[in-house]
Amino acid sequence: MSERKAINKYYPPDYDPIAAEKALKKSAKTLKTRQKDVVTIRLMTPFSMRCLKCSEYIPQSRKFNGKKQLLPERYLNTIKVFRLSIRCPRCNHVISFRTDPKTADYVMEGGAERNGGKTVQEQGQVESAEQTLERLVRERKAADHAALGGNSGDRHEQLEARLAQTQREQQQEEELERLLLQRKRVRSSQGDSGRDSSENESDLEQAAEAALQKQSRPFRALLPPPAPVQSSRGTREPRRRTHLGCGGGRDHRVRREQ
Image (cartoon, rainbow, N blue to C red; front, side):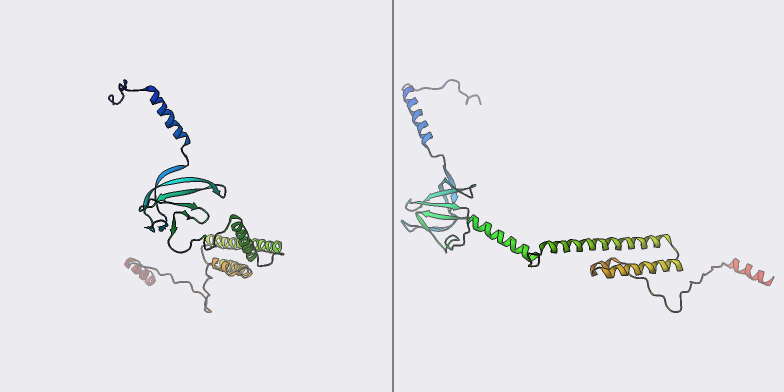
């Protein structure tokens, strides 16, 4: 690194400081008058085109060393518009085209013509900002009108009816949850299945069915399946089996004999 940082600089014998100063002033003027908005870039053609001077066909995505220039116009006061310029590879003719943010495409300016069908702008399908806003407002109004059933005059009444319906559904859900929780507590507190527990369960089932009949069908799926119906003969308690060993059986026989 030390050999690069030379302290002493070489001046030739014919060095003229006045001429060097003039050259610096001239280069400074050229830098001041240079167009700052024009930049040399590497670009590819966004579409196929034909040169108007030599009829040379330039395919799409062909690479060129071109110029990019910032134009003073803006789209929606924020989006910048650029002009791109290239030269024909055959006759060196200048071909220019610019960006079009409105249609998300490019517009041919001069030097060549675009190959293919008509663009979106030529077809007349381009909307201005005001037209776009009007269309969105109309679509929003139509959606609100359809959501409210088509009667724009009774909007408040329809909203109140919807609110009352949702409140009723919430109350019915709370009542059903309370009944199910009460039934669960009764089952957990009474382990044996006696007459009292069966009566309580039947009362709870009737109350739950009455609550379900008042509301819509989706809430019926929340109830557990009903208890099985008892037969007409009644329920019998299972017989208790006693397992006696050999010794126990002999003692029992001896006692009977005595």
